[in-house]
Length: 119
Image (cartoon, rainbow, N blue to C red; front, side, top):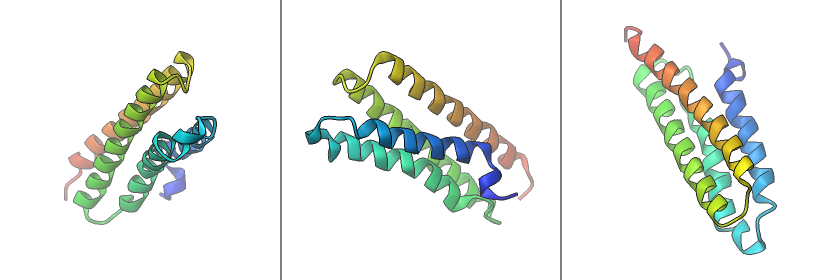
């Protein structure tokens, strides 16, 4: 299986692009503060997953899934702060939180599946 065949990877990449587009609407002073942090963490989720994907050492693959989960949680935090500052609507916040939660659940199930395989 190729990385590009992984549904969770493709969804995280799509979210990265959506987050990038969103942060470009932030006030100028936030483009390099909160906006930059959001762009980095949203991109790090699929990047961390990609780094360990299919590694023959199961523990490395599991670690990459765990790091991707951490980046998702960080991005969700930044989204909540951006919403509190008025940079996105409640509807936008709910959309992104829902999409990231779905990806997190997918990674959780993948982690459980990989963990059950004999090493």
